[in-house]
Length: 387
Image 1 (cartoon, rainbow, N blue to C red):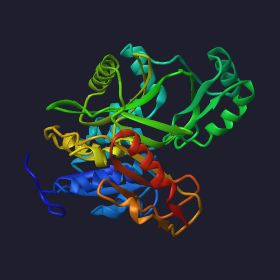
Image 2: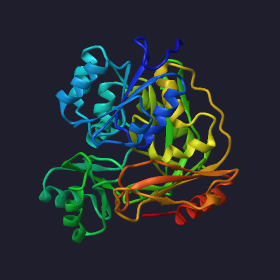
Image 3: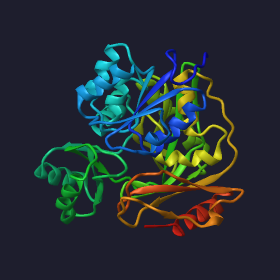
Image 4: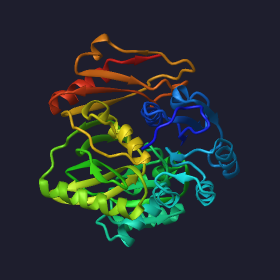
């Protein structure tokens, strides 16, 4: 591998389409290898904007705006970091010779729950929950009745749990229809899923490039309204269940192809493993790897993109707690207790320019035995305040 320096005419350039807290960590890791970063988002001063060589705020669902910026910057690699991007722009960029990570078709399949579910269940034959797609309230009522209650209702295109709900009875269906309109993306079609009474759910970070495929230790997580509030690594799994998860993750990531890290989500019941979702980029539950591994998920993503070896060391068990704002502010201030910063714990503050109730603003990270790490990660978050 040949490395360059930023801002030179031969610089290796990464363009981030989406510049939140996950993109910020990718940018930091890439810059450690001399990569030039162009950070793009829909608003100014997004977290990755703060550490990039150049930043832009554009409508990323506008095909021409995205293509115009790509042609202006001529990045070596384009990394989509959110779902709400013009897929037509990515396909066209690829036609023009630009390298989309992992590739435009993989992004197309995974940015939309319908595409990835059909690909996983019907093309690859993977085990999933039962599901149906609907685009009207009447269709939703019918599908929910057929699926049975409780059932999970999600927009086919969204992120961080926006628009997702569980309907526990027929009385909840219209409310779920309204909640779906809060999607970050496209709420014109919904997926109705059978509710799997799982024992636990995991994220299996799977990283691949031409050097091979590697798996991180499985990550357990607790979600609230579809967004994670606590994750820990590793979660204890029966070896048979872990092997099944790794086989499924390799099958689906090989099917998608390309380079990069994939956050593959599963439900586990006894030793049965059900494929749930997949993101072709670092995963929010994977922020725990900032303290548990020699190469975090962000560093592994950059290594995969650059074609570097994917070796790393797992340091030990740890946990990550999400701090969500309790107030609205155009100049947010976080008050964090000093003891959050110790020999085995610290906090990452994202630097978002505005806060609103429920917006993720920071995470706590603890390296310790699992139960103590989880307890401490939650305790740190509970003692943070914002204004």
